[in-house]
Image (tube, rainbow, N blue to C red; front, side):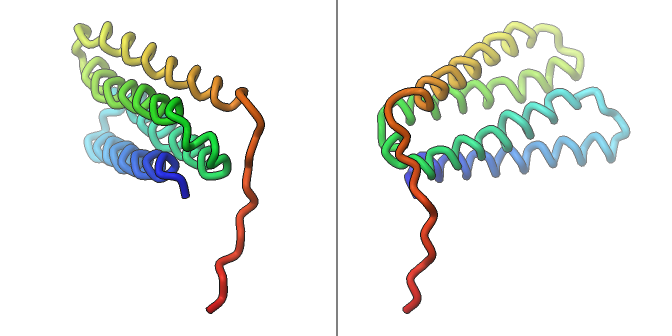
Length: 134
């Protein structure tokens, strides 16, 4: 599996853990003010990053390109900034709103880069192979 696919999967798992922790915190406290941050951690962090990982695993030639690592860095930094700043904003810190906005734009830039990668060049998807029996 390409290195970038592994990076996306590993990062996705970290966001899944964070998202579940937020959900547990909300359930235990009965305060659901941060549900938006919980949703962003799960959807942008866990689900979307896992989908990116699958795409790169199925398209190893595209995974090897420098733009793929750039896309990982931009998208991931956006989500890493967005989730905690959104969490703090939803807890009542309105000063975090510009940080959330900037992080959203960074995340969007990462999605646009992914679109460029998907729509550029020929698809080189590989079919999964069965492990060799020894």
